[in-house]
Amino acid sequence: MKFRDMLRMSGSSLWKRKVRTILTVLGVVIGTASIVVMISLGLGLSRASMAEIEQYGGITTITVSEQGSYYGDYDDSESSAQASQEHLDDEVVEQILQIEHVKDAYPLLETEALITCGGFQTYGSIRGVAPEKMEGLGIKLGQGQFPEENAGQLQAVYGNMIIGDFYNEKTGEGYWYSGEMPDIDLMTDTIMFIFDIDAYYNFLWGGTSEDGTAVQMPKKRIVQTAGVMEGGVEDYSSNSYYVYCDIDELKKILKKEFKNKAIPGQPTTASGKSYKEIYYTTIQVNVDDMDHVQEVQSAINSMGYQASSNAEWVESMQGQYTYIQLALGGIGAVSLIVAAIGIANTMMMSIYERTKEIGIMKVLGCDMRNIQGMFLLEAGYIGFIGGTVGLALSYGLSAIINMIVKSLELGMNMSFGISYIPLWLALVSIIFAIFVGMAAGFFPSLRAMKLSPLAAIRNE
Image (tube, rainbow, N blue to C red):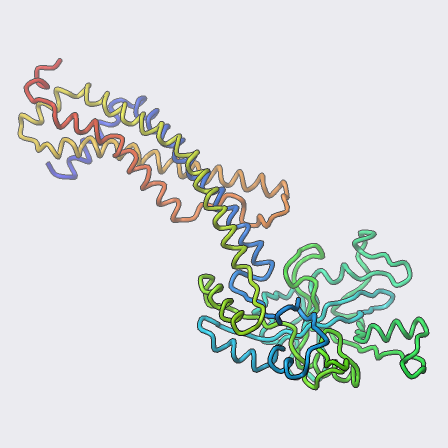
């Protein structure tokens, strides 16, 4: 018997008992939809968590700092010999770039400044970085552009949440207190930075220097705005609270501003004096693949520096969500097992009803394997139809779940939804439904194959 004839006979036999077939298919539909939706919830939670991690610095990024420091907390008692070996400079950047699987490495210099605009002010965390590396930090602009290289002046890119931190100098009220945005346009208003914050407050309070003279008012520097990051005042990302600028321009200003003085956040000698060189606060390292992050991290740690990343967090969360997916998939599988029992029952009933037909086929010389294959195809048909309809139902349920979750605003990054059905899951669900159908029809097909031809013909 040709395979095409087997397909035709299996399909026609299947729909001779339409109600029974539809009810059996319905069981597979429910089972398939249960498994797909349950697994999709686990996948959706995992993807939402990965999106959250991306907001906190990415999954292939390593932050390098000095041993025992947290982004620039230095031990002032170190000797200059130790400093040349342990502090972060261009030589360290070059060494890290030589490590296998490192795509890029670039330094960041962090400091603080008092930022004023009209009658408003705030304390800003200033990050100096090469302008061409800003996109690599995940900075996306809503207005303006990145700072120009060698511009000859400091140009700033403001995080989208900075505007909410400005408060009225007189009342102390700001957005987080009153809910009203300050009357500031970061792109067009005149904004000034005061880097020597201690000197500024000493001047206001009438303080004196070590030689007894009055503290002079530190310079207020007008800083041109290059751009503002995209997002609202409450849309958090790892860059939202920072002000970014060209690292070379920042170095120049710090050297001028703190001439003959210790630069805040920079290491000093045992006598409290600054080194001639400005050292970096951290080095940002981009790895080619998440699988190599821990390897690179270990290599940097062995160099005597402190390397941190989200790799451990990611692995821990992935392990948890794997268990969640297995548990949810197991719950859904119960429905499909029940459906498999229904398929087996349907096939057994079909064999009893078609006993004479089976006997005639055997007498006419039909191969035993063809008879078995015909019943397996019928079971496979049920699995295929039920799996396809169940998958379509899963997509519908997934869309409804995502719509409900988004309307609830649960706080996690649910821009992709909590239920996610990738292409591989859709294909696997149909293949699995066909497999379950054929597995359920295997023993009934064996019975059909083993029927005695004469006994089958005599059967009424």
